[in-house]
Amino acid sequence: MNMHKYEKIWIYFGSATLLFFLIVVGVSAFYMGSKPPSCAVTLDPERVREHALFEEPGLKQIGDNEYQLTIVASAFNYDVGTDDKVVQIPKGATVHISSTTTDVIHGFEIAGTNVNMMLEPGYISTYTNTFKNAGTYTLVCNEYCGVGHHLMSATIEVVE
Ligand code: CUA
Image 1 (cartoon, rainbow, N blue to C red):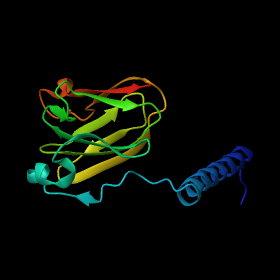
Image 2 (image 1 turned 45 degrees about the horizontal axis):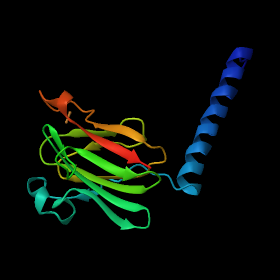
Image 3 (image 1 turned 30 degrees about the vertical axis):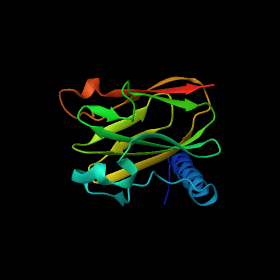
């Protein structure tokens, strides 16, 4: 079989990039332990407030520089445990975030960070993040959820 020179180059190039990306995925998954955020934890979406995690949403210190932040989303609000919808997090703190929704699917993105989850009724979404830089971050809903979608936000203040 006679193959054109360019055809050969593309086959080698394609195979090499495929191999390269498989190695990247393999190393990050098996050596560095990365995995997608878990959504395997379930709860009754109609009884969110009776769940131990979500009885009192907000920030709680659970260790040395370690916090648990629970937030209940509903159309069109994030209950972060404060009246002004502002959460203050000390700079450098590791925060274990748990959130869920009481009604429809909402987004959960803290703009400017890697925190970006989908909240689905019946599931608890979790993400652990270390807030290294002080500043004001906005928690926004990035899944269209109804007429008040654009009003759905809260504020995360990372303070010194
Ligand atoms: Cu909630 Cu869009």
